[in-house]
Length: 382
Image (cartoon, rainbow, N blue to C red):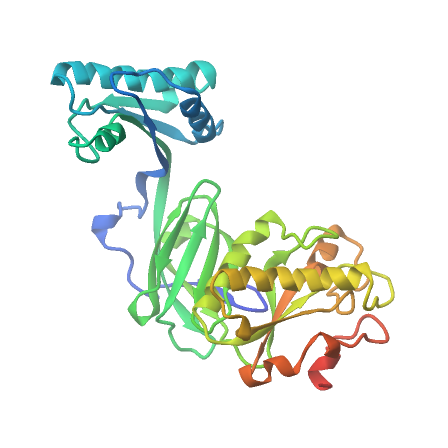
């Protein structure tokens, strides 16, 4: 069985027996493991011999609590070493009950979602010799957890040249948590993904265009392997950045586009290519709008937004050249639907020879006579 997920930039294939499955020690017979993942781990600190919450503690608990019932909470009380073991055990119990009661009675959390334990002075996280150490030990650990069934998935990362990619990372984000996995020798990887859920996979590899795609983890992944194909970043090749779209009339990315920006950042950091960062806007059924117009300046601002983000995250500015194209090269010049208009509000990337990168600039981005052409004039006239 082979299933293709189509894309202009990459391909994903489920194919039987590509690589061995995870070892039996990591999986159950069905290939799915029940586990609990800690999403947040914070400490509520207390003054000596005290268990009441102050305003800072209350605000922290408010920030940690979630109405979504998929989360559970593990509260563990601790003390410093002052006092007897019996007294400290009781004090740690009072501290953890204080936190639990606030969650239940003030923040309306179902008590069945909360598990408590108290350790007294038996599990310090640092020395009790100093006052600062004792303060850190007088705590209640608050862990927000996510019970999940994880399905092991193995696969390989392959270039469009047919060769396995030995250097890369896979970043997984589901509704409730995220994780990352390295690509190992011979281009293989091992993932643990939440069974039955939709996950977003970002895949980045040196000098290859990235994947940003949404998939649902299904039982077929128990017997099949996942092969992810990435295209090599070739000079003079234009790449439409998947899911990289903006709020209307702004240079602000849609929230769901942030994962794609993260994948682009990792791709550029782990590559040595040079690129033009192209900004575009949505202005359907209109004439080309030139310098000085809102549309023209917005396209510039969008390309600059991505450029500045990459630069601030360690990508050398001499490898990037931002250029705005106004409404000249919309994907859908006569866009009618909101989705088509959203896709027009985008950024694209063109790989260039580094020696030629700055022979092209904003002045070369000449306005076409009419909207609808796919030729960037500065590509052939500079």
